[in-house]
Structure formats: C-alpha cells, structure tokens
Image 1 (tube, rainbow, N blue to C red):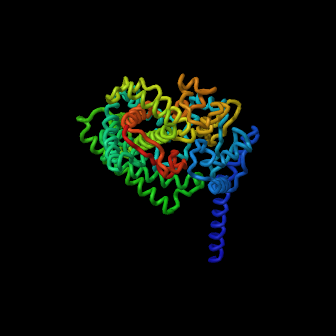
Image 2 (cartoon, one colour):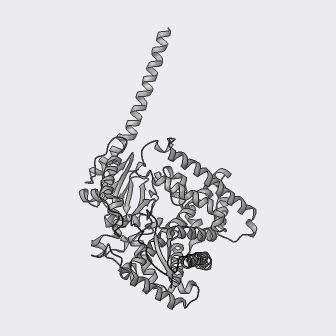
Image 3 (cartoon, rainbow, N blue to C red):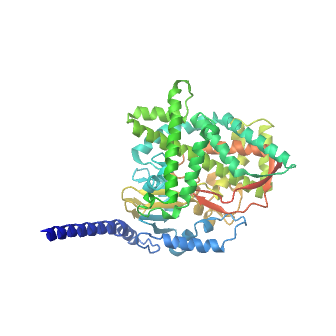
Length: 514
C-alpha cells in the first residue's frame, strides 16, 4: 500500500512537472512563434530568435562590437548608429519593416512613413501603450498617463491636459523666470570666482531647475520640497537603464538581484514621499490654488474609487508628471546649449533676437511668442536629439495598419531618430544642425511633416508639449541674455540611452558673461 501511494505521488509530481513544462513552452515559444508566423506570411522578416531570450544575445553581441570600435569624443549627431547598432544592422538586412524579440516580447520595427501615418490616424483603444511599460517600468510609470490604456487613460488625459493648455502655460511664465534667476546668479558667481570663465556641468543644473519649475507649476512647492522624490526617481531611471535589453525575459523582474532590490526599495520610498505631499495638500486644500495636484485629487474623488485605488491613481500620475515634466525638458535644454556652443553664429543670432525682443527686460508671454529664431533652434534640437527614442505601441487586439495585419500582443516601435535624420526626408544635411529648415514652420521643414514627431504621434501626443516649449524658450532666452558659452575641452560626446537620450559623461561648457 505504501509503495502504491509513493508511486501515485511520483506520478502526480511528474504530471505537474510535465504540465508546467508544456505551459511554459507554449507561453514562451509556441504563442510568440504563432505571432511571428502571421507576420512572416505577410512578407515581414527579421533575425531568428532563440528560446527564452529572443534576440537579446545577438543585440548584446552587435552592441559590444560597436562599442569596441567606437571612439567617444567626436561630435557626430547621427548617434543612433552607436546607441542602437542592431536596429541599424537589421534595417539594412530586412528593410524599414522588420520584427525581432526581447524575451517573450514580439516587436515590429516600423520606419515606413505610410505605416507611421496610419499609427498617427488610428483612434481606437485597440492600439495602446505596451503592457511592459506597466510591468517592466512599473516602479517609474505605474498605471499613470504615460503607460495606461483605454478608459483609464482617457480619464487621466481629461484631467491632466487642461492643466497644460496654452492659456494655463502662459500664466506660468513668471514662475519659470523666478525659478531660473537663482541659476543665473549661481553661474555669475561661478564665472567671477574662476576669473571670468567658468567651467560648468550644465545638465546637472538644468535638471534641478526643471524639477523646480514642475514642482512649483504642478504641485505647489519648490524643488527643495520635492528634492527627495526627484533624486529617487532619477535613481530608479538609472537602475532601469542597466537592464534595458532584458525586458521581456519572463520572471526576471521578480528575481532578487541587487538592481531589482534597489528598485523595489526606491519604489516604496517614492510612494511614501508622494503620499506625504498628498496628505499635506488634503489638509490645506481650501487655501491652495488650483494646480495639477489639486485636479488629480478632485478627479479621483469624483470617480468614487476606494482609498487604495485612489492612492495608486494619484501616486502613478504624480510619478509620470514628476519624471516627464522635468527630465525630458532638462535634457532638451542641455542639447540645445551644446548645439549653440558648437554653432556660435546661431548663438549670436539667437542672442540678438532675445536682446531685440526683450530689450533687457524679463521675458513675458508676448516676448516668448516673438522668439522665432529661438523656436527654430529648439525645433532643430528636438529633431537631432529627441528625448524619447521611440514611439511605442501594442496591438491590444488584432488590427490592420494599412495592408498589414498586426496580431494581438505584438509591440510596435517607431524609431523617432531614424525618421528625424532620414536623408530622403530631410535632405543631404539631415545629420547637420540647421535651424533654418524650420524658418517656414514644421510643414515646410521636410518632405513629409508627419516624420517630425519629438512629442509622439496621434491621440497619445505628449500632453505637456506646450509647457515644455515655453519653458525651453524662457530658460534659454535668459541664459543667452547673460552668458556666452562654448564646449569645454573636457566634454566627451557620447549620447547614451537611459530611458531618455542624455550625455553619458555630462555636458561641460565654458561659460562667461556677455
């Protein structure tokens, strides 16, 4: 009898192991392979994936080879070749439309302009943000407006978009000026103390400045009050960038690796800090001006959800705005200063415009509107160095884009930098800094206007683009009015992908008073 029971348990154990093996084989290989086969039948090719890892091993190999041959330092704007060399290689091998895999995630690389236009025009909730943003990037984005889909996203957009309308943003210009003036004073002191020319790592300063602006504009407090939140968000961003190629490997984010443990700890700390800010606001709600935080509180109260769900809603969207509202703008300002430092004629031209428009006064909404040259400089900066590298979408249901059927679960990557520097679209000088191309607006800057997408495409276009453009004009105009600048000999040009594209070794400029 005892032997019979042991045999039964052994048989059950073996059955469970076999069942799990079949389940995982189906989940990790057969299911993704069916999606790939549907794409292959439509003539879409790509590198052959391996079990569990997809094409990650090949991506690492190509990237490692490229890194060994790369010489950091030379300022080459066509940096996508070094940051994502495997996409360059596969585009050369398979054309503008190809597929590849990271773990169990199936990706469709789309740089075909007709399909990009289809994505822009697609209105249905069937095409949304990738689910891996909530899973793999959850500690940074959660289910906030950047990563959410369907009715939840529509509700968030309805709350957040009005707070970044042009009329609202114009009312924030004085606040932006007030935040920038201390930066100018600190640079003046630095220049004076170093004998008339100061060497400044400007990206660090601009990140703090942009954080102060978004704190004051949206959350009713200065950067010093939210400093701990920003420092932890930055730490999460850096930790996540270390495992960019590992998204899609099943279960990897649950492993207690040193990096994952750090991310989990930071996520809890960020949530606690944001809830403290929310608690203070709820106490002082009757005396506070209407801002984004207040709109989020009122929006979640009107939805009638429970306290835990309400807290998640507020925390996730605060994280999204804290991150997107300061990180991307600071990086855009950093690259703008680099390009003006490299192109002194445009620096002189932009400064002359600021002096003519402002006449020695601090900028206001009317002055900002008249800064055409500075607008062109910013637009060209966002063409060459867009903060985001990809427009990311997922087919939440099977759907058609043009003549292509996209199976449910397939992710779409539109490489922004590839479109922004395509010679066939922008001309022979596509890899060069030439703001003049925007002299007659975006529609005349290139052959196909929908190839210029620094703020995304379609219904999911960045809600804060008005805020970003105005802040960039205010900050750059004030810097230009006080300082001239050039690249420091210490600067080493090496754009790096850390969820945004930023200078790997910092941005060192030599700064002196006008």
